[in-house]
Structure formats: structure tokens, C-alpha cells
Image 1 (cartoon, rainbow, N blue to C red):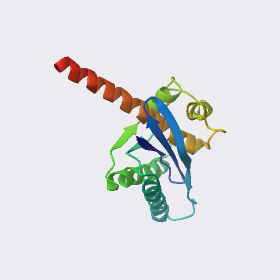
Image 2 (cartoon, rainbow, N blue to C red):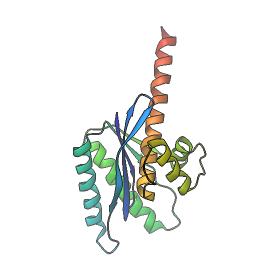
Image 3 (cartoon, rainbow, N blue to C red):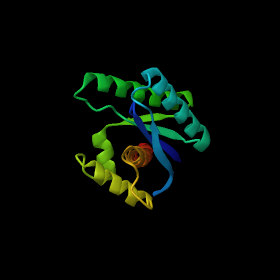
Image 4 (spheres, rainbow, N blue to C red):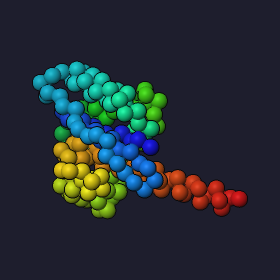
Length: 169
């Protein structure tokens, strides 16, 4: 299963693509879609959507996982972040893919084992779990962590479903 993880942002939207084969996770690609703050928001959102569409066409993921919005101190920043998050959700839905959402606490717990882990801990664990040659850029590492969280959650959900079916027999 190929998973596209997305860490939405109006200036930098991180993306990470991994392939899950059983218990093994393999890194496919990661990076950030960068926009300029002086560019109108609508144009920035269009760039994010277009680039996510291109990634989906290139890698044909089986699922999209998006980090949920955290509560920002600045309402204007929170709104812009929400717009970028909406674009990420839309890109997955428009491609006909299942879209999952995870909180930062869920992502950090799945990757580091501690929900209050630092950004550097997340970066280091994504490097370790995916055997990356170097630490990924912060937004990309966050997106890879979202994809890893989905892989672990998907496996857990599948196991629970299988156990439930067995018990019902």
C-alpha cells in the first residue's frame, strides 16, 4: 500500500510518500510545496492543489493521510492553515482515495511513542524508521510521520477487524 502523508500549511505544505509491505515501510519521496507569503492566498492554494494532484498522478497512492489543524494563537494564521488543509483533503477525495485525518498527538505517539515529542525527535525517528540517508526537512518529516501513523493505524484497524470476524464465527 502506498500512502501520501500531508502536513498542510499555506507557506509550506509538506508531503511524504511511503510504501507499506506487511510490517516493512519503504520511503518513496518527500518534500515541501513552497509558496510565497506575498502571493495572494487563492494562488497559493491553487499551487498546493496542483502539486498534490501531480504527486498523486505520479505515485498513485492507495490512501492519503492529513494532519489535523492545531489551535493557533493567531486567528488569521489558523484560517490560512485551514484553507491549506481543505485543499489537501480535496486533492485526496477528488482522486477517489480514502482520506484519513490524524492529530499531532496521534502522529507523534505513533512515530516517537510520546505525544509531546519535539520536532527534532520526529525528524530523527522518521529517518530511523525509513532508513533515510539524512534527516528530512521539517515539513517533509512531519508529512512522512503522518504517513507512518496511517500505516500503523491501518495495520491495527485491519488486525482488529480480522479478530472481530474470527470471534463472530
